[in-house]
Length: 442
Image (cartoon, rainbow, N blue to C red; front, side):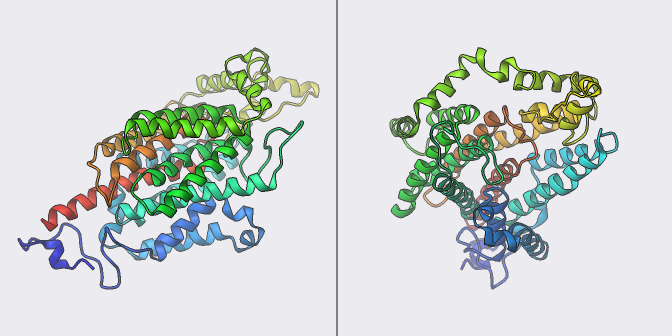
């Protein structure tokens, strides 16, 4: 245990932050404790959906229970590096402003009840758990543990999906899964892959590195089975970032690792998969380009909703309502022709149409602030016990993968985004605290 005297150093100066009570180890060597366990359970279930893979866990309501316990413990344990004030960051400011603007959209929403439900039951809870996730860490070891939970949850989900859902013949790709559809699952996989690369390439126990490598193979196999074109583009973006900027390993080994992952994709993909992927560069026969219910038509209508209501938009989670009530196709209903109330299939158009220009500006600020802080952390000097730069690069690749995947999916309010933001800000907080402690000890 690091004593208060050790924290003060030979000069006798008092540390900037209060010391831990006797029952709690001091960072950076702090062990798992109740708060970290509860947050990990929430992360594995709210984002990884692990509980839905095993019916017995659904009855326990593990996501709700772990969230309540984590929030309760965090409120009680307000000392040292877990003080609420330490979650302050540009991302946090942007996130709170984004939540406030989403709440402001409720009174003017096309469907106020739906907007209220999204803001209160979804976005507010995500912001609260973002605060707890950032607040619970005491050092970079805690951030690594949460990243490992994120990666492990994705591997478990992919493993179960690969064993329970068969593909072949007309059903050449995965379809409806547990909570996620195939495209959402593909983006989740891409956000987890860089974290697996981090655990495989940094100085870890051999067992963990081997398990991380096996997990990466399972995730890539799941990605191929998803048949998601957006997922493939997100994978290319994430791997491209790692190949160019993941400096935890020499450039030649980065190239070997990326080539190895590409080989896994090639070996597990079917001819039908590549036929589908070819439509990325040959889209003329794709319904997303030619159909009124395809993505291009949806995006054009979404921009129309933004131009029609540029300040507050149509209201949080009201894009489908706009499709049914104010879209250029809505008149068909007067003639007995059904109009599907479709999601936007683009997180940025989703926010722009639903929350207006200020809303999408706050959303972009939130993402930009996160990438900026991760970029700063990537320049941190590598250390054996706290490879901050390597983890920051891996998280950047995860966020880049999410951004590319979200260009084709309605993920603006999805839990995986706010978990990634929390991990990034938690790493910033941990690195700052450990730098302060190191300076105080010397």
